[in-house]
Image (cartoon, rainbow, N blue to C red; front, side, top):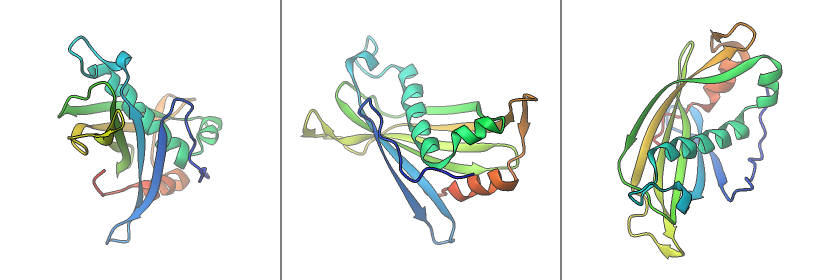
Length: 176
């Protein structure tokens, strides 16, 4: 299973900076960074990003990560789907209109049948062309638990063999 080494550029203005990181344990992994800008339609009646929108922001980050590192068409042909089975999400600081947000995504754990993607959203450096006074502040953190599902049987698959090796190479123990 191969992955595309050229990350896509999204038509909606988001972009991804995917880098490979190695830590002292000679354990390689990757962390992707996707940047987007908060728009008025992302806000709730209180003037900050609606809680449901964070799920969309996190999904954008995961799609960028997966498109850069997994051959999704091959997985589909092989009858493999990546299915979310659990979510733990914490909010730390409210994002508001025109905030630049940086979504970091990494595969943080790989077990025998499940994997966990750790994602964080931080305030970016800019807001309406000016330096953001809270640049770098943690906005939100989420852990998404996934399984690979055999689409023919509807059952979870073990994360071993070729797919296990590919996913194992993506695991990053670094903080996002």
